[in-house]
Image (cartoon, rainbow, N blue to C red):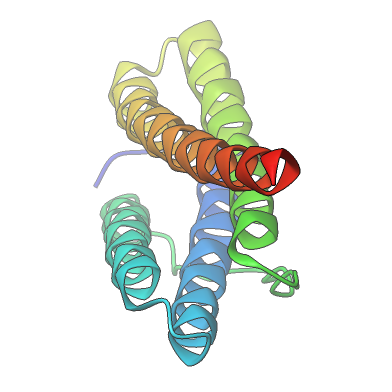
Length: 156
């Protein structure tokens, strides 16, 4: 077992709360968009659920390695929106919060010379940045489709 700075343990606990909030949000959204008849979007959101669950599992493992009982302090409520675009905007906000959290944890670990946890948080930050970029691309593609449909309507 490694010893960890109490603040690092706090970053791990908060990260677990954020990751489990993301799992809850993506899982709920997958079921909702499936009810809307959007099977492809539902499958994609289910994949996001699995990825975020993997992050949560890695956090739990890290906490156990450090001799800490994992506990998510508070899950965020799932955000509501009337359409897929609105849901994805909520997801983008949550992903940004995760990226910022991991970036802050990475900086702190770097500051105190904790290379192991710095590398751990940096890896999660990088993965969340990739999620955020993929989500932004999905949003852009949906916005492009919506704009072309409205332009088609305007020409008639």
